[in-house]
Length: 190
View 1: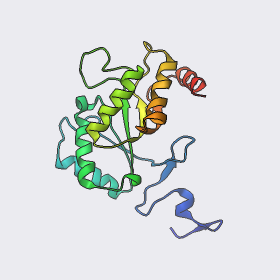
View 2: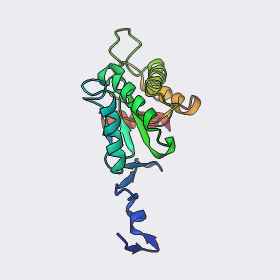
View 3: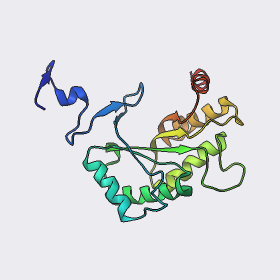
């Protein structure tokens, strides 16, 4: 593409990088993520380990994907370990990719505070995820499911503390929450 739009290269207008991937802002933020992401749900740490994980991440990267996702529950934490090992070996500049993880289910342990969205588990679960990922922070942490057993105020405070006070993430969001739950959290956060 060589067209120009109002003095800007069309690639910049569309959010296309040099590798051909299209980027979008994550919601109403300034964070740009590729329209496709690579997640480690069913494979990393389960059926796929080691070099193949690194090769998958590199192939995605080579095709313009900058957004990589995992969760504490995927393969009981092993997905985060595999992705963390691969990212460490690939040694990409940390400011060039977006990494997300999700908190709620824990890693299969049965102790009562090792899952859910209590302030305790949001902070400690995220810290454990970061250890497995070998990262000082994630760009995005998601509440993997709603937690009806924890007051919404505590959930919002937990994620706010993880971001504002502890610098463990830059953004937080939700997965499979209802519009009502998201509205309630937004009102509390404001």
